[in-house]
Length: 330
Image (tube, helix red, strand yellow):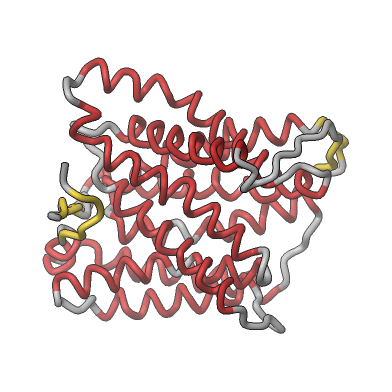
C-alpha cells in the first residue's frame, strides 16, 4: 500500500501574511481554550460526556457545512480526491483527540493527561527529524525544551501517580493532536480549509452518534442551570457557546492558520490554549492561577518565540516541506 505524502506547509515569513497567520492561530487557540470552563459545569450538572461531544461536534459541523457543500459543487470529484484525508482528519483531529484525552482523564489527573497531549509539537519536530534525517536547529530544540518546561509548570503535575493505560490514551491523544496540524497543512485552493474542517467535524459527529447509539458512550442531557461568572444561566447557553463559538471558530481559524505559518510553528502557538484556558477558568469559575503558572506561561511564550525565530532560515524551509505519510493514496 502506498502512502500519499503530506507536505508540511511552507510558511510565509515576509510581510503581513506571517503576522496574519500568527494572529489567526492565536485566535484559534483562544476559541478552543474557552471549551473547558464552559463544559465543566455541564458535566458537573449531569450531562454525559457523550452528549456534550455529540452536540458540540454536530453544531459546529452544521454551521460549517455550507463550506463543504460549496466545495463539492464547485470541484468535480472533490470527495474522490480528498475524501480519505477529510475522514482521517475527522477520526484523528476531531473525534480521536477528544475521545483519547477524556479516556486518559478518567484514569489519571487532568493535568497529567493535558501535559502528555500537548507534547504534540515535539512529536511533529521528531517526525520531521526522522523522516528527513536532518536535525532541528538549536533554536527549535531549545524552544521545544523551554516550552515543555513551561507547560509542566502551568498544568502542575505534583503528586500525580503513573497509570500505564491512561498514559497510552494520552499519547494517542497527542498523536491525534499532531495529526490535526499536519493534515491541516494540506488545506489550500484545491482543498478549502473550511471544507476540511466541516468534513472532519461531520465525520466526528457521525462517529460520536454511532458510539452513543450503541451504548459505548452514555447519553444524558438533563435540563439544568449552571453558574458562570456569578450568573445563573440555562445549561443550553454554555453548550451553544462551546459548539457555536469554541469549536466552530477554533477549528475554522486553526485550519486557515496552519498553511500560513507552517505546521510546526502552529503547533507551538497552540500551546497558548493552555494559558487562555487558565484565564477563562479564572474569570468564569473563580479558579485563581498560582504564581508558578504565570512563570510557566512566560516560558511557553519564550519557547514559541525561539521556534518562530528559526522560521525564516533556508534549512527550516526545506525541513517544513518534508513529506510525512498520513493516509493511503486513493
